[in-house]
Length: 481
Image (cartoon, rainbow, N blue to C red; front, side):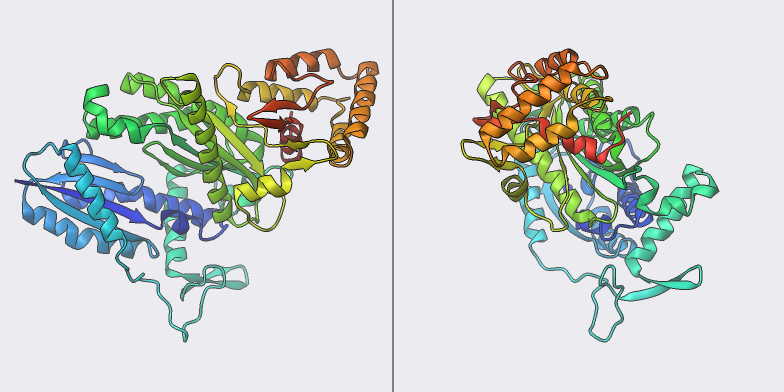
C-alpha cells in the first residue's frame, strides 16, 4: 500500500503581479520558485528521487510509502507555504494506491480530488478588518514601514516578504551595487520610449501527450517532467544570452512568463521557440512545440492586465495553429506567436480589442489589422523571421512608412481614395534614392506571396487583412536599429 499525494498552489499570478514594482515581481517569482525546493525538505526526498513525479510551477505529485510521512507533509507543508507567501493558498489531496507506479485512472482520481478541494473556501492569512490601515497599492493590511529617503513606504506582509526575497536574489546575482536602486523599478528594463514587453509562452499538446507517455515516449511522468523542465530552462538561457534587460517571472515545466525591454521581445521569443523545439527533441527524443503571446505596454500599466492579455494571445495563437494541424493533418501543432500594443488605458478582452481597434470598415470592405499569428517555420503562413525583415526594411531611411500610416487612416474613410493614395506612395517610393522599393517588394513576397507594394490587403483566415498595422505597432514601441 502507498499514497499518491498532490498539491496545487493557487493565486500565483495574482501574488506575483499585485504591484508594478519590479523588485516585488522578481521577489514574488523567486518565492514561487522556492516552493519546489521547500517540498523536497518537507518530504525528505532528494531532487532526483523516483517518488517525485512532478514538482514545478506550483504543481506537485509524489508517492509516499508510509502513512506517517505523508500525513506530516499534509499537516505542515500548506501552513508553511501560506505563511511564507501571504496571499497564496494551497489545495492538497491524497489517494491510496496499490503499487508505486500510479495508473492513469489513479492520476485522474487525484486530479478530481484536487479540484474538489480547490472549490472549498479558504481564509487568506492577510484578511483585513475595517479598523485596519491598508496599503493603498495592494489594499492589504499594513504591517511594516520602509524608509525611502525622507519618506516612509507602507508595506503589507506579502510586499515585505517579496522585497526581502528580492534582496537575497539581488545579492546572489552579484549585480553591481550602482544598479541596485535602479533595478527595483520597471524603468530599469524599459526602452527609450518607456515601453516594456510581457511575454507568455506555453507548450503545445501536453494534455494529449502526458496520459500516453509510456506508449509514445517510453518514459515515466517523473523523468518526463524533469527533462521538460530542463529543456525549458536551457531554452530560456540560450534565448536571453545576449539580452541584459530581461527578468524571468515564471519558468518551469513548459511555462514561461518574462518581462523584457520592448526592443528585444520579438527576437527573444523567436529564439526561445526555436531553442524549445531543439532542447525537447534532444532531451525527450521527441520535438515539442510552443506558442507565445507578447504584450507591449507602458511601464506604468497595471501588470496583471498585461499578463492576462499575453496569456490570451498565446491561447489565440494555439487555436490558429491547431486549426492548421487539423486542416493539413499535421503530426504536431506548429510554433507561433501573436502580439499586441496596448494603447488605451482601459483593459479589454482580446475580442473587444479586435472589434474596437483592429477592424477597419469603409464604403466597400471590412479589413482586419491582426495579421498574425506569425509562425516559426510553417509553409504558406507568415513567418516571424520574414516579419522582422519587413519591419527592418520599413524602418530604413526614406521608407514611406509615415505615408502608409496616412493610408491606413484613409482606408477607414474611402476605398477608392486609399487606393489612389497607395499609388502615389509607390510612385514617390520608386523615385526615392534613399529607399529601394524593389527590395521591399521582394520582402513582402517572402512574407506572403499575395503581398506587394501595390497590394497590401489580402484574403487571409476567411477575411481581408493587412500586415501594415502590425509593422506600425512594432515601429511605434521599439527603437529599431
